[in-house]
Amino acid sequence: MMQNNDYDDFEPAEIPRPVSAVGMELFTKGLEQTRHQHREAQLILAVRGLITCEVAHGLWMVPRQCALWIPGDTEHSVCCVGDLEVYTLFIDPELARNLPEECSTFSTTPLLHELLIAVTRLPPLYDVEGADGRLIQTMLDQLERAPMGSLHLPMPADPRLRTIAKALSSDPANRTTIGEWARIVAMSERSLFRLIMSQTGMNFGRWRQQFQVMFAIERLTEGASVQTVSFDLGYESASTFITMFKKVMGQPPGQFLASRRCAASAAKAEQSKPKVITTMKEAQQALRL
Image (cartoon, rainbow, N blue to C red):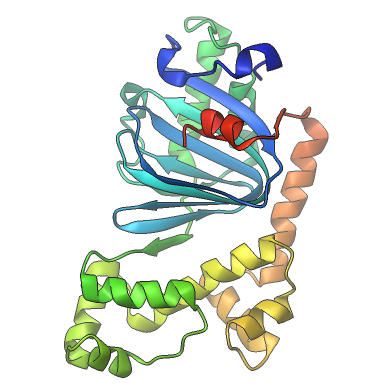
């Protein structure tokens, strides 16, 4: 971890090492940053709180105990929700040749989780040829093997589909049918169905469900109850919402959140506190937002 007296001067691009990293706690009601890019690839591990990242063709969600991979020179915007404990690594593209060329989420194994945090605690000018360098290489090896996450919402380029996406983003409970949308965007229903499939890889119903799931995870992370979220999404009962959530995520919402809370508690017991950040300026410097 970086010390308080040198943290304000932290600038990854100026550190002569292929990997630079930092951990932090941020107490905020939310943090948003407009589109930007940097040469280094970026890996963000969320231990507490929720992070979303939008790129040209998709929206990625990173709940606690997951990691977000942003390749170098990728233009992206970032939004953080709730109180955060986050660790971020900047990796030279030369070290990232075996990692995805597009934004991705990883489900972190216990070993990878500990390795990522350990890397953030290395001194800025760590020994590349010694134990520190071997630790980083082990972390990269584990990252290459990590299972991919599923919290990805494809964002189409077609302006007609963007109209639909904007409506579903602002109101995930929207129940407008594909036939009704076809009339709104002046297309035949069959043409709209094919366009959605070609640009998102999902049918309309599954795409709309993904909006709902991502909204639900954000609200649940903020502390809303399952029943409240189900009603906000227009479900007649919480059980119907739970069935949908389990079908998409493989776990009911309560279990999904509990597994991440347990992992976060276990990690907290093993790790000392990260640097506490209290201002937006410090957060933006740390995350390169």
